[in-house]
Every structure is written in C-alpha cells, then in structure tokens.
Amino acid sequence: MTESRPMRVVILGSGRGSNAEALLRAQAADRLGRARIVQIFSDRPDAGILALGPRFGVPADFVDPAPYKTKLEGAAEEHYITSITASEPDLIVLAGFMRVLKPRLLGAFEGKIVNLHPSLLPVFPGLDGIGQAWRAGVRVTGCTVHLVTGEVDGGPILDQAAVRIDDTDTLETLTQKVHAAEHALLPDVVARIAAHGVAALLPRRR
Ligand code: GAR
Image (cartoon, rainbow, N blue to C red; front, side, top):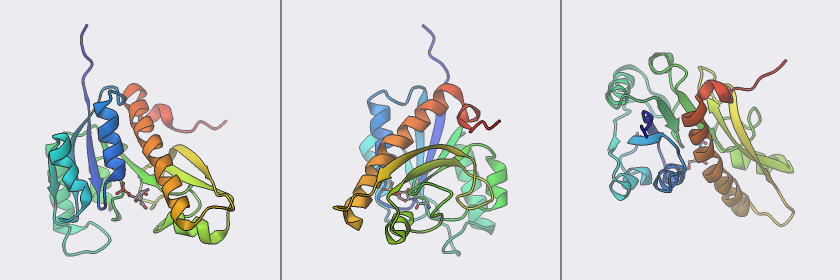
C-alpha cells in the first residue's frame, strides 16, 4: 500500500499550548490522518507551547516579533514569512497566537491559515472570548475554527462546538469546558482538512 503525501502542519501559538498538545497527542494516537505537525513557532520565548517541541520531537522555535506588541509587520513579518515558508506548510494553525496577521503574511499563505477562537463566532471576537460570553450572560457559548482572512476573527467558519453554561458554572469551570471543547474540535477539524481539504469544510448556503 502506498502512503499518501503528508499534509505539513505548522502551529503558531503564544501561550501554554494546550491546543497544540491536543494536536500532537492526536497525531501520536494516529487520529490526524495524513496531517504531520512539522514545526511550532511562538512569538514569546517563554511560552509553554515551545516546551512541547522536545516532548513530542517537533522543532519549536521563538521568532522575534519586535517591535510591535499585538501585530506582525515590517521586518518581523518578513522573518515570520521566511521561517514559515522554510517548513513548506500545507496548513498553518493559529492555536492561541495572539497577534493580528497583516496582508503580506496572509497573502503569502492564502487559504492555508486557520484560527481557533474561544467563542461561537461571529459573537465575542477579539480578546477574552470566554470572559465576554460569561459577562454577557448567554446560556450557550463554545469555540470556532475558521479560515483566517483580513478581518480579525471574521473568516469563513469551518466548524464550531457548543458549550452550555449551567447555573452551577463559574468563569473557571466555563473556561475548562470551553478548553475541553477546543481540544476535541481542533484535532477533528485538522483531520478532516487532511482528508478532504479546507474547501470541503466551507459552509454551503443556497
Ligand atoms: C485558546 O483558548 C484559543 O481559543 C485562544 O487562546 C487559547 C490558547 O490556549 N485564542 C484566542 O483567543 C484567539 N483570539 P492554549 O495556548 O492552551 O492552546
């Protein structure tokens, strides 16, 4: 039997990396199909996500985002483009990457970047999606994986998972529930992209 060509996946993250870990665990359990996580990049040298590299045998590197705090532009953006390109990615997963991507980088990887967001977009975009839902008093929130476009948290939705907010929940338990939903949704979406391509997951409306 011939093995199909791997779908090369690069993960970008700024935080603890629990979603990157969910992807790496899914890969280890053979639940990602032909997806292969080939590289992790972070804009924070101290991010937990970078510690996953040695644990799972995947290169994990800090790429300096200076001088900006919340975006990638100019020389830093070029550096990211060069670094990501060197990994020859078929898919780039933003798993808690807390920077706005600008047109140059988006253009370099058009249609290949997906983002995980902790709310049922299009509601509660931007920072602290879980806290926004909590304070708004909604009964249902969740998480979204969407294609990244120039509109922050606004690209086409590939899939979502709902999380009920019970009267017994606190912000802490809600946060745990949304993260658990993310840890199931993201590997599932990546596996489906590996099997069918991104376009197959785009919503069809008549
Ligand atoms: C996740 O909850 C993800 O949805 C969120 O950051 C967290 C990263 O956690 N992303 C955003 O808010 C993007 N707007 P992790 O580092 O443990 O995977």
